[in-house]
Structures are given as C-alpha cells and as structure tokens.
Image 1 (tube, rainbow, N blue to C red):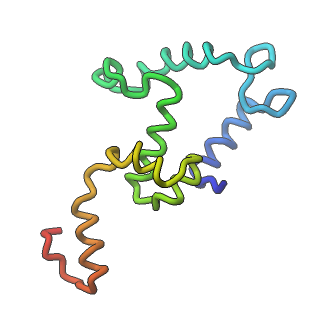
Image 2: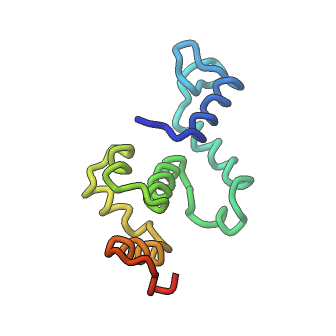
Image 3: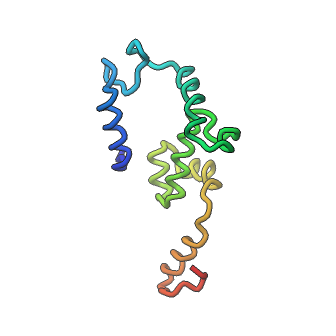
Length: 129
C-alpha cells in the first residue's frame, strides 16, 4: 500500500525516537510485549484533552482510538481521493465505503460544480466560483 510522504516522515521519526520491539513491532509496552487494548484506550483518553479543542473534548469526536480510522478515511474522501482507491486502502468494497462514509463528505459543492463545468468543456464558471 503506498504511503504519502508526510506519513512516511512521521513513521521514520517514530522509529528514530523509539525504535521497534525485539520482534519488530512498532509499539510495545514497557516490558517489550504487545500493548494491551486497554492501554491504548487509557492513553487515548489522556491524549484527547491536549489534542482537541474544549468543545471537541466534550463531544464524541474521536472518543476511541478506532475512531481515528474513520477520521482518516473521511479525510481522504473529503480531499478528493477517488472512492475505489480509498476503499482499497481502507479494506472496504466501494459499496461499503460509500454506504458508511458518503455522508462524511462535506463542503465540496463549488468544487464539484466547477469540475462538471470543466468536464462539459466550459472555461467560465457560471456557478459563481
């Protein structure tokens, strides 16, 4: 799976700072063993407050570490990555992806209209963009 350069940089920084567990895993507990699911949840709860705005902390936004997957997939779609590519990277079929995430794409009306106008061979945008 291709990884965008900013994520590669983040991974390299993590590896330089923390290395890997003896068996090659990226994350290990203090004894070098697998990190328990309860530990991820406990750390995530502590990390949310400094990472989010106060109104976000009191919401359900990214309440669980797994919610970050949804945030990532939504961001890819909202960034204009084609649905088949997002589905492949997320391990979904396109049907499942669109059923779950289509409602997450927001604020693209002007860009969509501009693309349609360009697709029709028009240079001037009569949609007001």
